[in-house]
Length: 269
Image 1: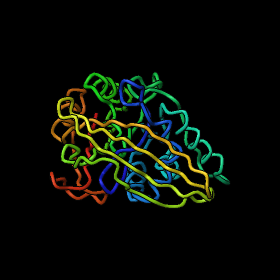
Image 2: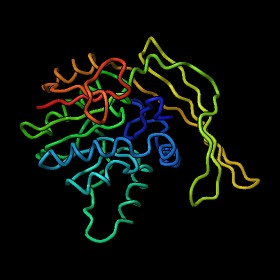
Image 3: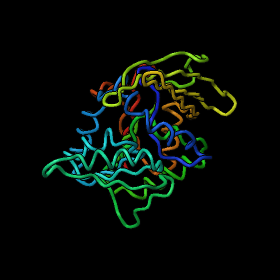
């Protein structure tokens, strides 16, 4: 999914809650994001983590795109359910040199955080991750787990995908083309988007076609995301005992409006 169209991407889920497709996506996640999102949000998350003054937990850390830069400024643990996403994150950690701080990486379910007795100054939920929880029950369990894991005065900072219900439906559109560095392979992303208005979901069908010379390999998978507004998510945060203190419309801290391309909520315990 093209982040220029505000697509959520990180993987951490179980099959019934939106996990399907994320292991398959791991092989192409970094390639796609290098062309779309790149590192535009990374300075924001580093600033938030540096200001937290304590340990940080990242939900759905994926391949470590945000986790590793944040580890330079704050102690951080990343949790994800996708084994193949974490495999790539751990490979990145192994390539770190010198005295660079290493993040912790844990395979686990964000609905049941495996950190009994531990509290965090900050829980980060980048890149629309909580919208991959496809039911209120799963979202409620996750927010309750986050609330319980925050230290007094701790903050949850989360990003929503901007206005998913308004995304145009299309079929088999070529969205990206490019070479994969180091693999001498050319990749094409063909994508379809469908809106399920009844269930409040945006559904993606993705096909990555990789060519090396005359050889061709195709990988198909599906991803699903829940369409939640800022107001709806604010209500759910409050039910979990979290008080929303800010709504941002950019990574530079601009005020949020419904027309903002970036939707960020900050809540405190």
